[in-house]
Length: 322
Image: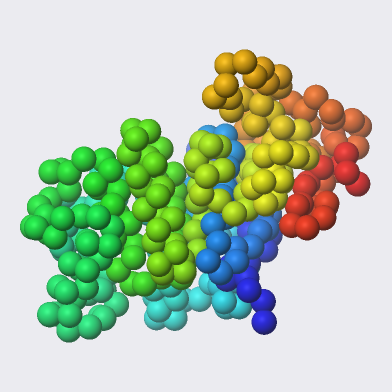
């Protein structure tokens, strides 16, 4: 029996580009382009990359908040991409999301109690009295004062709002939570509190996370394995220790070279990438990274690299290792 809770196979999400007088389709924005990875039970899979690389779209497509264009999303062996209606609704109990902006994702007209209870109502779980008890229990679990149940989102700080978002995600006792940049809008001191809370909850409930972020130090702290995305494609996947000490892909090397070192005596050589990120509406032929890659050669310009296994759980999409 595989211990993979989630397996994503060649997942793609394209947005049509329409133009001309009759608004006909003239192309596609390839936001997510044949991405494959897996998440094991109880682990945290970090997903990193520059803004606009397709991380958030990947997370939303996993939960069918956006419809995938192609590919498979196997959750406990069931392909979520094929589910409809009631079967999809039932499957959603096991998959929840924590959004980047806790204020925008919470209904300002609902109290904290109503917000956390809403998923239980939708899925018709428990009696009214039991739901109230469950809400208070979850508030306690995420460190929210039980007396705050009657307050509204605007009465809370950013960190407290994110705790409300996490509490709502926990209400249905999911197996997997997709956390889309859950700490990027928070102060650094609050970030650590939320990250520590998520780690504690993982220990307590055996949760698996897909943790989406662009802050490599936060990802290093919380993740077990990390996937690096570039222009809608997966460039490298590795256990965090290996990725941070022995990055294989030139893009990963450049990303890590930009992370500040806390010791002023240690000088890290910066890898400055030339040019701008190409448009996902018109990605380069071959390897998407080749126009900016300091190590690119002729083959990179014409042939898209496949994922190559470097040993243990380290994979890289780069012709240098083929």
